[in-house]
Each structure stands twice: as structure tokens, then as C-alpha cells.
Length: 156
Picture (cartoon, helix red, strand yellow):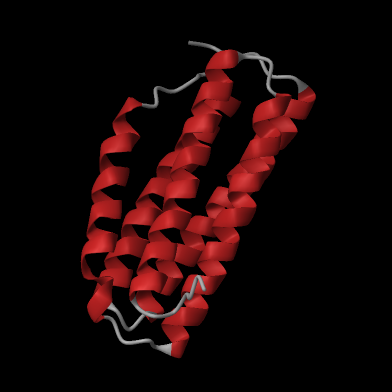
């Protein structure tokens, strides 16, 4: 399906594309810095998903609205791995700082998608952006679950 974008929609997509690029860079860099094998795998998985988001945004900017079906299965697999093994992780201050930064980043990116979604006239494009936003929220949830089970995030 093709999409004709307004100037404002194009600007919002360019902004989101930059956000995705930063997420990719951060996840890759942090995967190399973390002490936790599980966190490394989680961040590598999220970097791949952020690349998919980046590619989807590029497709929309090129006039094509991508399908959202292929990305969901990989996301659910990553979240299952997160909740299963962080309990044995050592509360490492470097990993805690990395996780805090990525949780903050995911909160920001998700909020930016929320604003962008309301600005799009095409419902198919809105659906793709909503799908990406949901995956961003799941990234935040996965990081939160890791932090909580590793004793890095206290909810009380």
C-alpha cells in the first residue's frame, strides 16, 4: 500500500527515524559493555527490532506502508527470555546505569510515537506506528523486568 505524506508527517517520521537510529546505536554499544550475558542478549535482540522499526519508517518515507505481522513473534520471544533469567544477575552498578538509561530512552521514544500517531491522517500508517510504539513499550517492560528481578529497580 502506498502513502502520501504531509510535510508535518514527513518531519515526524524523520524525527522518529533519528530516535530509532540512536536506540540501535545505544543497544549495540551497551550490549558490548554489560557484564550480564542475559542483558547482552536482550540488548542485541532489541537492537535488531529497532533496526526493523528504522526500516519500517524508511519504507513509509518512501511511500510504502509495511506490514506489521513479522515483527511480533521475535518480540514475544525476547520478553520470555528476560523474565526467565535475570534473578541470578548480580546488581552491577554499570549494568544498572545502562538499564536506567535505556528505560529512560524507551519512555521518551514511546511518548514521541504517541504524539506522532495522532498527527497522521492515514489509518494504515497510524497502525504501523502504533505497532512500533507497542514494541517500544515492550522493550521498556523487558528492561524493567530485568532490573526488578536483578534488584536494580524497587517498586516500593
